[in-house]
Image 1 (cartoon, rainbow, N blue to C red):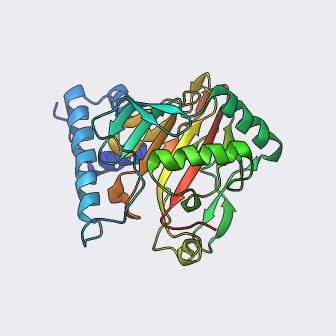
Image 2 (cartoon, one colour):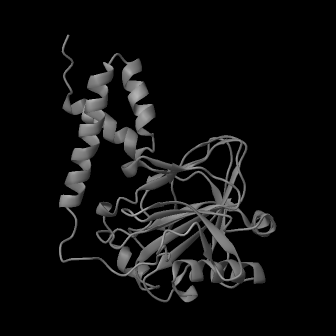
Amino acid sequence: MTQIVTLELKRWILEQARDGHSPESVLAAMQASGWQADVAIRALEDTLQQHLKQTEAAAPTGGAGVPVPDLNLTGSPSRIDAGDRVVEVIATLGSPRVVVLGGLLSDEECDGLIEAARPRLARSLTVQTQTGGEEMNPDRTSQGMFFQRGESELISRVEARIARLVQWPVDHGEGVQVLRYRPGAEYKPHYDYFDPGEPGTPTILKRGGQRVGTVVMYLNQPEQGGGTTFPDIGLEVAPVRGNAVFFSYDRPHPATRTLHGGAPVIAGEKWVATKWLREGVFN
């Protein structure tokens, strides 16, 4: 019997991808529902490729985007000098620019960030792009807090290390945010840039312009789950203590393929520290 790939199926596939499910898990769900393996694979590949082409076609014209932070990976080094610490290069991707780093933080630094953040945790908020303020978002079920830039010797040390690593000024960064995810907590796929079509974005951009890069640092390792997912490229970064993932985006548009999320924690808890980088001086 011939199975027909319907528009409803394609929409379902895209919904699963946007929710952070890996291509393998989507394929398994389709087969469990009775779809033939060859039909399911073709439908999955065709749908995601078509979506990517449509996204790229809708990208703003006018050449390259703005300059962004980046690591100097000339010669494909396996280790990079970050000033006070040598960091391992675990994996790299050119487009979108994603770099997985090993040992960005020491065990002592991870513990120090957790203990300094713990008494200041509250339900995480997101930027309210309608007004430029903040709001509670059901897609983000973590607890979090922000350190002021340069607030302590530890924060200053980490910020200087990141600045040297990605070749971006310290004062172009927001304060470090620390988040705790308990079992079941997650952050559904989203973009870190501010949507230019939202009325509150001009107010947000007065403080340093657009976000152009993100560094997510893993302060512990949950027993199960909690990876950082990139649905558009089928990538999931495991939350390994001391490691980090860096990615950049040269324009506020889905064509950057930087849709990402924090997968649900299945067992244990996850602590992460995030550093967002802006176009200009953030104040």
